[in-house]
Image 1 (cartoon, protein in one colour):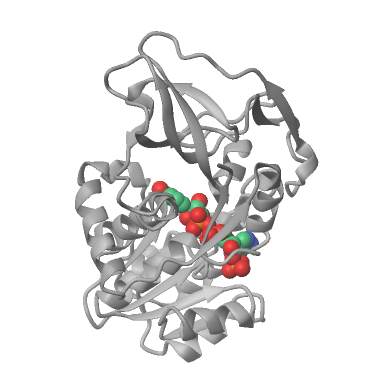
Image 2 (tube, protein in one colour; image 1 turned 90 degrees about the vertical axis):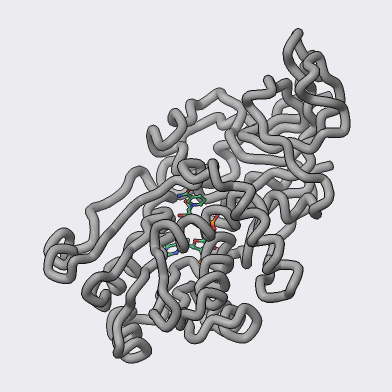
Length: 330
Ligand SMILES: NC(=O)c1ccc[n+]([C@@H]2O[C@H](COP(=O)([O-])OP(=O)(O)OC[C@H]3O[C@@H](n4cnc5c(N)ncnc54)[C@H](OP(=O)(O)O)[C@@H]3O)[C@@H](O)[C@H]2O)c1
């Protein structure tokens, strides 16, 4: 049998597990030109929630569909010479055990790496941090880099990469325990708890020399605080807007835009990781090298069991993860 989670109802406000329904179906059969994939790991991403709000870089999720989600799987039967049984592949597989795919819907992955790394630090997570920081943020050694959702998947890697680039790194995250973790374990120079009160004042105190690059995973209060501290010529890499996802729709932007952008000549640029995939292998090689030589840690929050995927998404959106959250199902 094939288990799949159906996105059954639009959430009213924050996501709850009861908007998903578990469905059992027969095993799908690959048509000519297709392969059968067994999903091994499901990636849990804030984007899963954003896809419910409206069109993003993919169509809006519609009630009744299999819940969308990236994953890593193994080809177990194939009717195409481009995919062979045993191949490891990733793609937007949805929350299910099995699916059929065409070769153009998947990317083949290198089985010499740990599957969890292929989903995390050597997958979308690490590549987003890499391209967002180096291509969009363009830090220079000695500059100050600020990262929000700094204890999460992308943020934890982006902050470490900025350290590798010779920058001073300030992480913003929720709660003292996560602040202690990113400084004590991941090597951030300083951390701020955005839930603790006046973030703008705290940032000013910790960062009197200003911020040169802000890697924005959240929008909301951290963006507001960063804008006030950006140096002339600063760069803001707009990676995501997680403070605005778990609700009906995004609210108004922070005050000061575009005024602050103009007076401080700030470049604020959004990006989608796939825009940079022409250089994916170069980035993967660099990330794997830093991982090997110990300069980069790959924190992961691994949950076991297909039945726990909906709760994992709720937990992620409430900040109960450290590092890359994923579900091992096979
Ligand atoms: N542009 C791209 O191509 C691309 C690709 C992948 C991901 N992204 C984006 O990158 C961002 C991070 O994704 P991720 O996969 O690494 O997730 P993540 O950071 O591991 O998990 C989300 C984190 O967001 C924080 N958060 C939740 N509500 C918040 C709020 N109201 N204000 C501030 N922080 C809040 C929580 O940490 P705290 O405990 O610190 O609150 C939570 O752990 C997301 O915005 C995502 O959409 C973009």
